[in-house]
Image 1 (tube, rainbow over the protein chains, first blue to last red):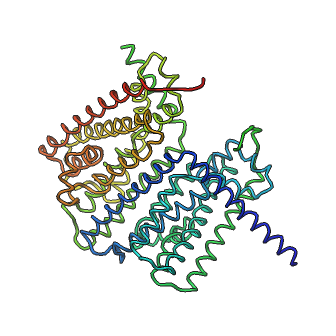
Image 2: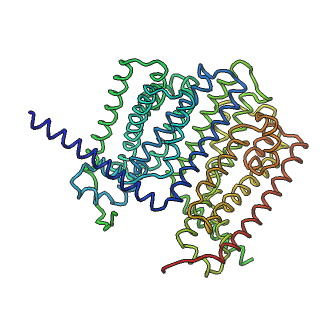
Image 3: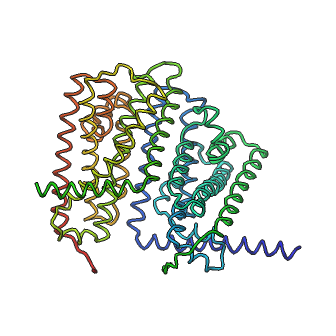
Length: 272
Length: 263
């Protein structure tokens, strides 16, 4: 029994090391084109800041929006930006999975002695996502100040939310194994998650909230973390982590099942 | 006449190749309906107490967004296409062909736009009627002006994107310019009508080209008057001509310093 547990621990450690190595080499690759990397990151950062102006104008007309004030909305944006940023930095292939399956490019990953699901996702980094990631932290510091405990919680929510978002997007991409190209479904899922993470949840009706807390869990990505940052509870935190874990496990199992249907195109590719 | 036929053929090819990706289309129209739904909820919450704001009721606001988003979401991928051609060296294969590079991109882009417009227009009208009913105070006489303004909004958007795409001749990565220009057009007329902006910013925005992409047709649709028409449409035409000329000038300058390696 203890050998089994040790083996499981080893697998987790090996894959965490794999993610760290991919991160390191992808960052080194970004640094090879430093000017482009910095331009993309700053560009994305500035791109995000325009939305502060939008909300500032809105809140100059109304004092509260469904119970949310200007600072609350900024914190929602901070969470959403850093979460999506984290996901695309560490798991940069998250929007490419459908294409990779369609083109038969999974062969390369299948030949490697690592979990295909993790390996394929973290082998690429989206450089512009650094702008989103940093923007979220800057907004967080502006809204919450230097509060180490909140910072720790914020970071935990960014990582957990990123993994949850990735799990949902990967599940949409996994449909490619069953129905052929599902990139359009992934696009719809991504747009839904993004758009329903950026506006106060109180503006939506009950039906939409059902979707936000089930099939497309924007509520667990941004709004529950937001509520926990405002009023922390251990039950809330543990509940959120349990929900996140369940979604991630389901996505992994769905992918594992789908992978059995994968047909190689015998495409010869070079992965550098 | 032969020249025109050549470019019409490019547009036709673009239409047929875009029609092949029906799923992408559906995703695009779904996004259109989704974004209008989100804005409807947002403005329902904002106007809950006051009923209207800056003269915009929820009904007018939803139709405003439909017209504005119709222009923005029907635009072509000319920026990405030009970027790929110039940075990837694909332009080298286009230079020795018997057509103008810009006219080729224009025909291809308009083909894409035609397909997106045809898909988005009925969806826009349908969601408008479903969400808020008929546009309050709509006058049929405004329709030709609105159609013209939508077309010029699309053309202006195309040439602004093409102009930014041309910077690929000089820069390693120009996506930041594109994002910033895109967001300026978002905040100056797409996400918010100019009437909502603070005084000084509104005055500056009137002189900038960004609001003539989405705000102009949306404003004409929701608050049509001859004064609005004469103050908006000529500026749209002027800015479109200016950016078309700037794009051609940038191309002339850029193509001279083009250096493509390999074959």
